[in-house]
Length: 395
Image (cartoon, rainbow, N blue to C red):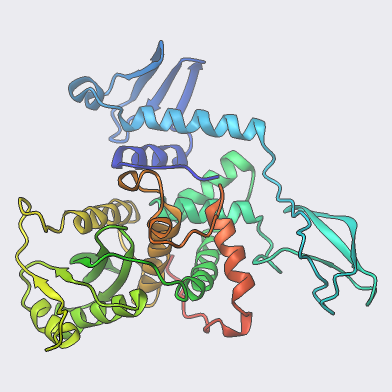
């Protein structure tokens, strides 16, 4: 299940829901939601088609507050729980072949039932061996839908322990926060190897900017470079300083991903950008890449869109409070880039993802996490995965 979140109030509402015991149902149109500042409870009531709340945010700003969002999320989840089975069931594909001898002379042989749900079994008539196909989730105890739900909540900013409580409260699934961290580790690495081979069709204008991120109590710099037309996040790098080589790494990664050079690169006035730009893009041949510096908010070429991206990252990072350590932080940033480019639809792109606008239409369907993991597993051999360097000791 994927819950679309567009602003900070929705994120806070989801966080309230994930905490548990924060919402009390009075009747079908009236609820009490605990105040997060410890000042009692707020009344959330539905009048006609509109929801109203007794909190100051709703009364004085006349906006949908986090308490209303929490109630709406709770109602949506209850409806889904009553209408769908969380169990995962694999269906036979037209190109299914034996995993042992690669023969297409196979037949269905019922289902293998376990805690994860029903998994289709097959019998190969040539080698007489039985097998099941669960692409991307072989030897994994967790239900694929639970795994992808946990990943989706995490990259929307819900903490690991709140995800644990959420899964237990609404789905009866007991899992530890370390297990969720390992899921994120495993599938982020897998998807990264796959999406690195995909080349987006981007425009000739790139925007880059840097922001501070808290990594285990120390502030580091996160550099982001985004394409203007597609909003595709071409590069993300973490560094401890803002020097020439740090900025140059961002430019180099973007050139590799796009397999091209832009017409314009828009940055702020940081001196390191100028020197890094000269080393990566300057040439005496035409056409030349132009460097647009000191872009103001009122100018046509400004950094509003990349700053909006960084606002999204800050919303997530604020709930998470900080990234864990120097080894895990780049993995989380890689996962966020996959989420931003391939999973999260953008309002400015008419509900499409940056990947779709950039010509990478993978047709991932409703559960984009699940489809992207399965597609990655089909194209990446397990032996090509790098060794695990994610440290789950401090989740």
